[in-house]
Every structure is written in structure tokens, then in C-alpha cells.
Amino acid sequence: MTIHLFDFDNTIVKLPYQETIEYLDQNESLDPKLNFKLIEKTKQDYLQALNYEPDGLFIILSNRISEVKESLTSLLSKLGYLFEDYYLISDGDRNKGNRVRKILEKYPKCTSIKFWEDKDKHIKSVMETMKDYPNIKLEVIKTI
Image (cartoon, rainbow, N blue to C red; front, side, top):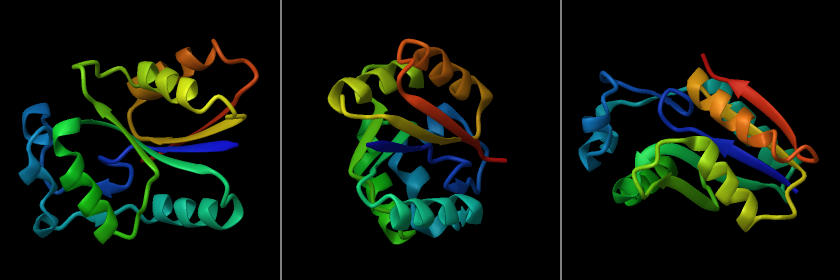
């Protein structure tokens, strides 16, 4: 099984405001009226993965906090995205590699991961974690 991991901020959408942790942790930062611009390449990749790997698992791996999950889910739905699971910050740990480890514990049949992300620090974190899973193929798609 392939797991498709998508970051949200500046991966699915270009933020219409300055990125600060304090603001990102607020529900109002996900208000659809803010004119989020879809990143078309990511949307194309998402649709292609849905068509060619319908048995794949689609997960949001974002450094948004779990308290904004409902607002995030609603905005993603309005943008034409549907995900089976969400891995957000729930314990203050902003390390995405640690959450990938939890994903792999929950979905042990995973054979490959495709990861869409814009920040090098998160890519490095996930790549470091994946060293512990040599039988799982990792493909990183860096959003610019």
C-alpha cells in the first residue's frame, strides 16, 4: 500500500498571509474568505494519485494543531480535497518525522510513501525517520 502524505501550508495552498505559528494555530487562519490560492501542481498530483492508486491512503501531515482540524477539513473539502486521516500537532511535537513513525505503526502494510512538502527541515526530518524503515520506499515531492 502507498501512503500519500500532504502538507497543507504552501504545499496545497499558497498562504495569503505571513506564516507565523501563533496565527496558524487559530481557526480564523483557515477562513475560506481569505482567498487561498491552490497550488495547481499539487492538485494535479493529488488527482493523478487518486486515479492511478485508488487503494492508496491519503493523509494530511501538517504542522497545524489538532484544535483547528475541523476548520482545516472544511477548507480542504471546499478546495476539492478529501483525506482519510489527519496527523496534526496534538502534543506540542512539531517534528513530522515522529508523526510519520506513528503513521507507519498504524498502517504496517505500507510499502511506499509519497510526501508533498515545501520545507527542507520537514523533508529532512521525514528522511531521517525513514532510515529506520529500509523496506519502505520514500518519494519526496518538494513544493516550490
